Structures are given as structure tokens and as C-alpha cells.
Image 1 (cartoon, rainbow, N blue to C red):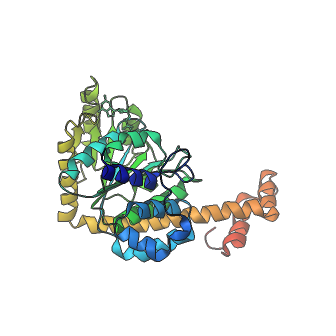
Image 2: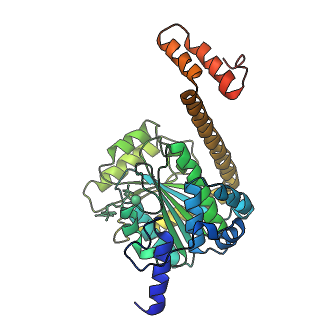
Image 3: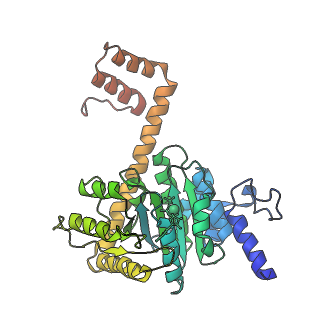
Length: 357
Ligand SMILES: Nc1nc2c(ncn2[C@@H]2O[C@H](COP(=O)(O)OP(=O)(O)OP(=O)(O)O)[C@@H](O)[C@H]2O)c(=O)[nH]1
Ligand SMILES: [Mg+2]
């Protein structure tokens, strides 16, 4: 590795390093400390697509720092240009590998890319998910690609909020294409993936639970499906099963294509990309893209507000002996549940509670 490349590598890695770990026993220079960033420098750095500014901004978002709030408020008018592909599916099916292969494909077309990889089961954050780092390692040194993993901070509602903000930051940074990876096979990921323009569901032979979830209507029908690890003898059977479920849905105008892929070798990745692009064109031609974005944003605002209201309620009950006493009384059957609800609503949300109960 030459001197310039080496410096670039170090700055990229430093920009992606978890806080506190950078520099420990290594010669990696410390990245700009928090105090050196102001809203103005951060906003300018984000707009210029500077990797350090992006890394810092997303850390602030994860920490729910007041500066992140100010930053996103400032850059929000610059957003709405990136196209966001949500990639979801059960653990280990090859989502990250497929994203990596898709990036390789689109980078040939000079498009800049951002990736937010969300793992609700992991307490880690700050880009520290080892698996993703390895899978996506090819792209860490590419200046046109920014990759970040996020773990959970508290409950899922907080994650939806952080994900939305992080995507807005990458959008304002001028990324043409955003990938949002979430692990999920049921409902929990819905809140997070709800912001995507196109949803890609990745399955592999053996993802029977997800197929059942699709069949039962528990999982929303995605826009495109990849059946990955296509070398597996059961891959074709899985495609047929999924296809038979999708044909039941006759009303939908867009018929979700199913593509067999091999993510490690990149087989059929070009076809998969064409299907993703076809969905985008479909949305654009039917004036659906703007409508979908409006719906998604309204849904996100609602989801975040609901989640905050829930947290507020939980904290209020935990901190207030009188509210806890109400719950005890319900448990002892001295007070009926809806009277307790009415009192809680009055006290916590200052609602008079009369009409809605
Ligand atoms: N044989 C084969 N292995 C694959 C393929 N795609 C991914 N893998 C392997 O499957 C494992 C999981 O791949 P990931 O890309 O990390 O899967 P993921 O869905 O992102 O996993 P999580 O984020 O942990 O849920 C890795 O060891 C990959 O090398 C494929 O098409 N064929
Ligand atoms: Mg992954």
C-alpha cells in the first residue's frame, strides 16, 4: 500500500472506529473530538460528504445528542434526493453480502452509496458489527461509499428514530443510493424498513418461517425478492413456494419479481439490480414515488411520536407512586382497568379521557 493510500485507509478506518477504541494500542490518529464540531462545521462537512463529519453526525444521532437534532433540522431541506432500498430478511441469508455485490455493480456506474446496517439484536453500535465490516470491507476505502452499522439503543422505537435521522444525514451528503439493512422475519423490522422507496426481501433455502409469514399476511409483500445461496438444491423449490404465494395477490399492479442469486460470487446480481431499477421506474411512471415518500414520512413521524409517547408514559408510571398504585389496585381488582386508563391519561397526557374511553 502506498503512502497516500495508507493515509486514506487510516482516515477512513478512524472515521468508522467506535469511540474510545480508536488509538488504543495503534497509531491511528484521533479523529476530531466532539468539541471541535459545531452545527455549522458539521453541516458543511455533511453536505460535502466528508466521511469524518458523517461518522460524527451519525454517532450524535445514535446518542440522541441535541447537536444531531439541530443538524438534521438544518439539512432537512437538502434531503429527498437519494433513492433508498430497504434490504430485509432473516439472519444470515446473505443481506450484507448481497448489498456488497450490488455496490460493486453500481459503483461501476459512478453512483455514490450509503449503507446503514441495523441490527436490533445487537447492543453494539458505532459501526462495530464485525460481520458486516468483513462482508462490506471491500468498500471501506472507496471514497464514494459510506457504511455504518447501528445496534439498538434501548427499544426499537429509538432505533427507528435513529435510522431515519441517519438516512437523512446520508441523503443530505449527496449519496445517490442508500441501502438500509435490517434483520427481520416478522413485524419488528417494519417500522425501520417503512422508510424505504423499494423493499428487497432476501431469503435462502430454509427460510420457511418467512415464507409462512408472507403467506399468513404477517409480513408485508416486498417489492423485490432475492432467493440467495442459489446453489443449494432447495433453492428452486423455495422460488416456487414464494411464487405461488404471490400469485394469490391479484390486485397488486406491481408483481414482485423473484431472483435467484449467489451473493459471494455475484451471480445474477446484475439481474437483481435491474429488477430494483424496474421497481423504481414503475413508481416514477405511476406517480407513486412521491406518494409513497409522503406516506412513509408521515408514518415515520407517527411511529417516532408514538414511541416517544410510550416512553413518556412508562417513565411517568415508573416515577410516580400514585400511578403505580393505580396499577396495583387493578391487580387487586379494586379498580377496573378502564378507570385506571382514564386516570393515567388525565395525569400523564393531560387528556380529559372522557371521550376516548
Ligand atoms: N454459499 C453461499 N454463501 C453465502 C451467500 N451469500 C452469503 N453467504 C454466506 O452466508 C453468511 C452470511 O452472510 P451475510 O451477508 O453476513 O448475511 P446477513 O443476512 O447479512 O446476516 P446478518 O446481518 O447477520 O443477518 C456468510 O458466511 C456469507 O459468506 C451465497 O450466495 N452462497
Ligand atoms: Mg448483515
